[in-house]
Length: 392
Image (tube, rainbow, N blue to C red):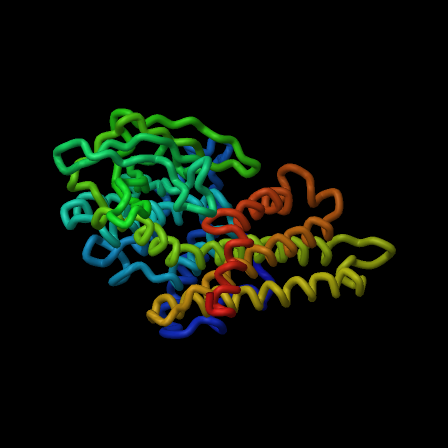
């Protein structure tokens, strides 16, 4: 693992609470990431790589932070600050590793929020142990930013359960997940407004099928179709009509952590740029002595550290129960947009090497782009911030 520039190495200056606890967690994460660098996973097969990463994360005990303590978790409840620290460190090494980690939380937190006790007892320990891989099925071809436009239907089947009909797209872990949380439209309410439900579905359910999608950064993602998939009443999450509330409650926790993943990508990009500029000699001296290049990095690293402040401000507020919707929106917006600029500057700093396949900067350039889209596009974050600013 390349040593990060000093100002990027630790986050304690921006995290409140028990610094001793966070120091211990960062040391664990650093040791884990160093071990991954010494024994890299072949990511050419994204399905096999994800399974291997989940296994390694579980063996290191890192997946325990995704479930409550009563089900084998590391904390009384999942903490945004802990997940942010993990994602920042993991994404420094690999976007695929970071995704394998966070999907165990995103794919199980709705069960933590609203699942029946029996379902929680059955599923959550297996999420923490890596025995089951999770998925979160919300996005549809006609329902992206406007999730209320979803068309997947949950039709009553007469015994208290439902049958799911429809399809979801851009679903991470599609095809390798053993656990899907699925959101679907139910019968309209008495007021004529659409209602949505949330349901847990096993990966081997009859009528569930998957079609893989290829994206610019290797990632297990695909379309998931539901052809009359039966869901018993015990696998409903929450009450009828609470699906969107559960989905948004889940995104409320994990949206800020997308910003942390962006920080990790930016950390790695800056590390690569600083190393290269210090080693590369042009016009008789290292490029690091060229004022124009020094100033360019000074500008992006300032934005990068500002993004870090926003991310851990939002995470701390979330953990303390005082967060407002604009906090994670600002964190995700600024961190992901900044990471794009930081990585672009790192690529420029390396010149032709920066876009050469096999270089870290080339991988980072592909990995960062999706962060400005998933879990709420940058445009949606601006809407949330503006709504907080103007009161509507």
